[in-house]
Image 1 (cartoon, rainbow, N blue to C red):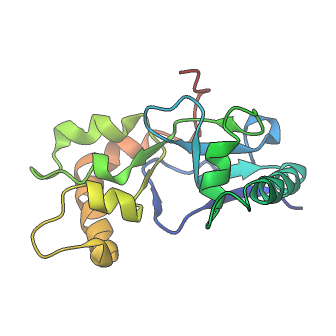
Image 2 (image 1 turned 90 degrees about the vertical axis):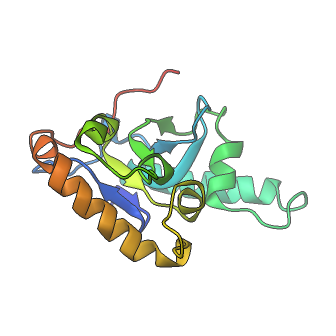
Image 3 (image 1 turned 180 degrees about the vertical axis):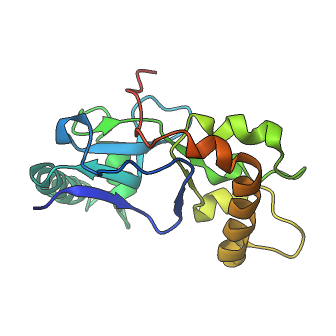
Length: 175
């Protein structure tokens, strides 16, 4: 046993889970959240890998943190992934939509379902809530209610489309 998936608490699926969940891509360590407008920089909001890959990445993250300990006052797994983006120590797939791309001032409509059709999940990060539209009086502190409201709208308008789509977790991102 060992290996598998890890996701942040603020990542929610917009596709149907497969009947068997095993790490895809031959178990290579994979990050599914790509920073917009980057070719290889990942956000550790959804990741997978076989046991040996998780161990390898844990050591790579620790080594990267040590390398940057004298230059930065705070270092995180996200900063390490960004720093290691050109070292090819992880695969990257653009399978997660950033929350600000669905928090629209005009509201979510059936026409917007195409936005999530090619994605596996949405990441409602603190930053996404700052960048997306929130009704007056709401803030990132209201994250649970904001997510519940969006997912309810999404399920009502797009859920039947999603039921037919099985979770695949991405095609290689070569951009």
